[in-house]
Image (cartoon, rainbow, N blue to C red; front, side, top):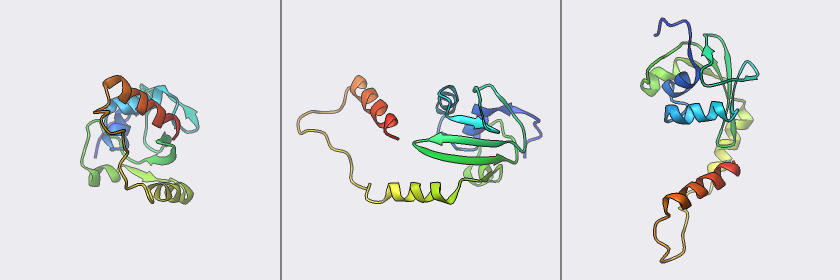
Length: 131
């Protein structure tokens, strides 16, 4: 794949599709939710092949081993070849159990309309704290 020796950890997390946007990957690093070899890292940390990454995302602890380095976002089949998923089975089961019975959409009171930008941010913050 890539012939790079090092790449920023936030860029790699985005390029292998662990986060939907680079901003989300950067924010996760800044919040201390990304560890490389057991140490919390900044978004600018230079990632190398063979390192182990732990990511806390939406209340789930995901673990990966870096196989190849990418600088640009690629399709999912290619991205999956760039890391080994070391996430324990208990975490994967927790993810599946969390989804069971979650098909119903959230509701707002009748006549309340759409949430304002401020209300939406408050809702997002509330949800993030509970995961």
